[in-house]
Image 1: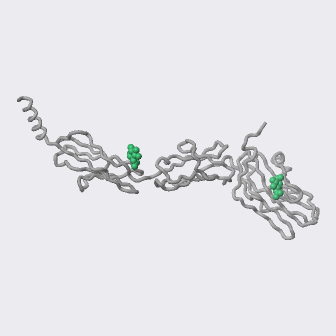
Image 2 (image 1 turned 90 degrees about the horizontal axis):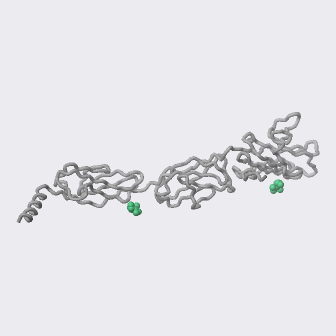
Image 3 (image 1 turned 90 degrees about the vertical axis):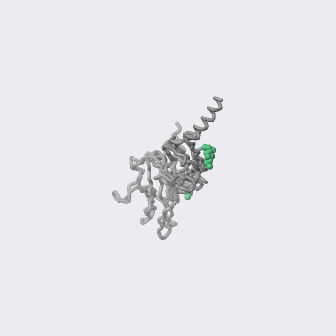
Length: 325
Ligand SMILES: *[C@@H]1O[C@H](CO)[C@@H](O)[C@H](O)[C@H]1NC(C)=O
Ligand SMILES: *[C@@H]1O[C@H](CO)[C@@H](O)[C@H](O)[C@H]1NC(C)=O
């Protein structure tokens, strides 16, 4: 039976750092990396090399997780029933002290140390800097993103984990729960160059091969007012005494503040401009101004032509005459 993929090998490292314990006279030991972050149930390889003075012969090598002696020696992990089945020494008795620990559990999060003993009376050495193993139940992913960006900016979203993940991990990005097929990512970053309004949305990320998806983070793309125009209702002939509504239509983010102009004079504010009981004095050119933090923009002017009753009546009378005579 083949084990599921993540169990085979999923070694994730925090810093690519090596820690070394160097002594004089040729004694030394180094762990690389010195911090390992792994997903629960995965297999971890702790790489390690050691040196000692020539003339010594290695008698015993082992890993331990405590620097407290018990019966005069550090306890050998391979004798620990919690580890014995899962621990495999891959190193040798010359210079390689690499060890493999499989099916890691949250409880395995610990410091681990390698110790070797030679045939000489003073031939004992422990790499006290140790390897720090952190096992997480899940990647605990978080999207880091600026909350708002301006259209045209370049923005990068980062998928962060409690474990810093290596290049090995492939990230999947989602916008509004839909996977992003355009691959614009670099390691754990999603690059949005020259961001567009359509890029607004809820973003989340996941690591390929794992079901856990980060919580959503909202990206808000702001832009100046566009397509500013005025609509008049009712449309058609406007007669004195009518109630007329002018509506300023404007697309912007954040929403714009609207003001109204008749000729060059400001006459109102708000998206809707109401004139109840319109009179012929209200005739003229109207336009609205839409402004947000980015820019202001004017609509084209619209002309209100208010007919007075008299004009209508005279037209009517003229027509009537026409009909009668
Ligand atoms: C030590 O042994 C491991 C496992 O066999 C191997 O992957 C690694 O390359 C070795 N390291 C050195 C420095 O030889
Ligand atoms: C204005 O609106 C039209 C249709 O609603 C749209 O096709 C066009 O792209 C918009 N123009 C701008 C500059 O947003």
